[in-house]
Image (tube, rainbow, N blue to C red):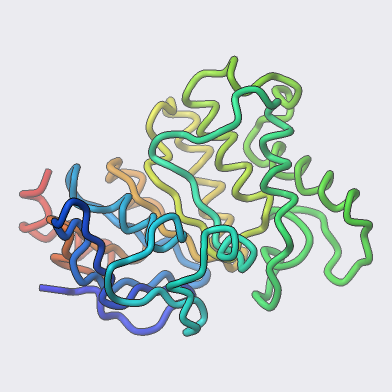
Amino acid sequence: MNGGRTGPGLLAGRGVLRRLGGVAVVDGVDLAVRPGRVTALVGPNGAGKSVLLDCLSGLARPDGGRILLDERDITRAPCHRRARLGVARTFQQVAVFPELTVAENVQVGAEQPRPTGAGGTMAGGGPPGGDAVPGAAVPAAVAVRQRVAGSLHLLGLTPLAARPAGDLPLGVLRLVELARALAGSPRVLLVDEVSVGLDAGQVAWVARVLALVAREGAGVLLVEHDLGLVSRLAELAYVLDGGRVVTAGPIERVLSDQRVRRLW
């Protein structure tokens, strides 16, 4: 069953196919990330979730199907082009620059050219919940500093701004990576296993941040094994197993499906 046909979204995959070593690890997936919502992508280890995120973010080119942003085909667009269009990503294996400070890592995201036409503060001048004034003329360097400061504050990282990232534990690095993604005010945020390495307080903090990101109008796709976090945040869910969507729909129905329960 390919249950992901739920209509157009801000970011969508249509029949996405990705082979590795001749094996289809993502096999004809349809998926839509809606603006202003958290959508979950769940499934057992090896289901193809991270590979699908690679296809959506441009790190991998699908062997079949299409990737659409605002119904425009971006299948052949590289990841840096998608970033400029407002697609941001975090990774299952945390990816930061260990020799840079926390603030410098976040600045990498803040210096992305600004996405346009998204509406709301996510397309405007700062991270969600920031104090940017829509339409205000702000010098580029000042705007970057504001976005860095706002993202650090949002994730509780301001006291660590001058610390080298390589000196910090995994949980903090996940927050740094999320802050970097948010510093670019993305229209679409792809989040891969953000809860790994976080304590309960950090998970609660991240949940509030992701909920705020969605309220500000961005579409969030959450890949996550913590089903408590998924049920708290997501409105819709896709369940991937063996590279295929086995069911999709409202979060309560999906997580109560006996086929889904048997996957864990």
